[in-house]
Image 1: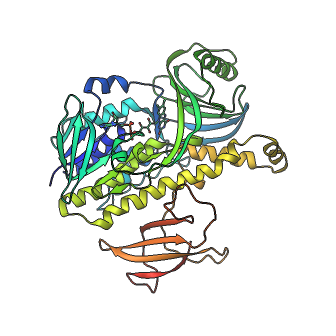
Image 2: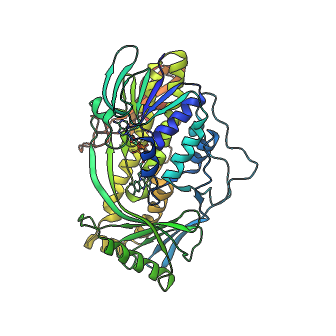
Image 3: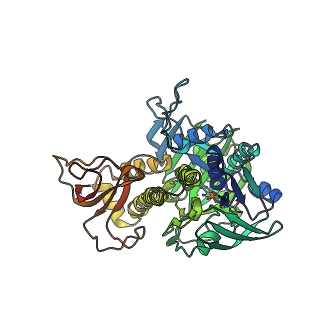
Length: 483
Ligand SMILES: Cc1cc2nc3c(=O)[nH]c(=O)nc-3n(C[C@H](O)[C@H](O)[C@H](O)COP(=O)(O)OP(=O)(O)OC[C@H]3O[C@@H](n4cnc5c(N)ncnc54)[C@H](O)[C@@H]3O)c2cc1C
């Protein structure tokens, strides 16, 4: 079979190529940027990512070192100058191996090791450092070829594969057994497949600065709500005394001038340190967070992953972490199909699992945004009258930034047991065997009346996953469960 072709040599495309190489699948990575330009354009310290511990463990198992990232000693949430939450992080137990990778699983999907009580710290690293490490890990792989200067412009599918045409200094025609579009938010692959990308533009905007200085909480990440200026500011440490600071901007979409940004820096550092300490400004930017989810993540032999498939980031959720999880989920399924022939159900499960997980995060953010960011009289009344609501918003924001818990946790499929204490709504489920494993697809019975942006034509909840069959249904059939 022809190699798997990955379009886009960003972190998700390279992560996927590395994962596929581990399964001895030949990969061609096409990227529109020339090699030297790709190096230069990526070197931005204000473009960083926070990766959950299990994502990091998966990368390390693939041979990608993450030494250029910072692990935090804790997370601190403050309202004005008062600390309201403090989450200390532990180190993974030395000598204790991460949980075993399931036999047909991918290291990027494996679970994290047991850790000290505060939980393991996420890893905060500049995106260019991650890309460089991924490239270094791929450098000695003969089965991966990265072709820069190749912009994909035409895509044709047939029964045996996909033909691609590229423009640029290495323009040519390519043949692929499978194709994965990791070509970012303006994905050409997505457009060529005719896949819609509905959602919202500029849900939130942040002014971002990377600077080297000393703050009163060395090694600790800080979220301050209602600071002196603006609504919210976060400070997240990177190695070598560098910090990334993000200021939530007002929703009116006004211009952020360099003077505004310097004003933000001085006000924030002055309030935190008493006096504005010496600092070295390394990079600045304005980061607009969009919320979008591609309608289909699979079209025949072509798939979408990373920013090409989803955009998220409001309230601190991390899109790049989800992109690397897409890569982990898809790699072993493509490898199975490449080596042993296509199993439609297995390939379909990529969209079912990952689209649902990202959709759940987007739905959670959509639900939480009006309450957390809403302004005006009702908010003030509720804060005064309903004690704890502000506290719960702080906890929610902390969880969102750390990618864990609460409404941010993606739906997991478990054996459904009726709860004796709380009557849950019945959901209609279909059980079937796919690739020899029991597979469950459930749909909420209730139509909400409000069309959900993230559902495909269905207004209720819908999810599919591997799961033990319900008692009485054997390996197939339809029935009701409580969900
Ligand atoms: C200032 C800033 C701050 C950010 N902060 C965060 C953060 O804190 N957390 C977070 O998770 N995310 C953050 N992001 C977003 C993050 O950078 C993206 O989520 C991430 O880059 C997505 O990776 P990707 O591999 O999917 O796509 P990209 O990194 O966009 O890579 C796409 C690649 O595809 C190539 N390409 C595009 N079209 C074609 C084509 N037709 N043919 C061939 N190649 C093509 C491009 O050259 C590029 O190399 C931030 C972004 C910015 C700008």
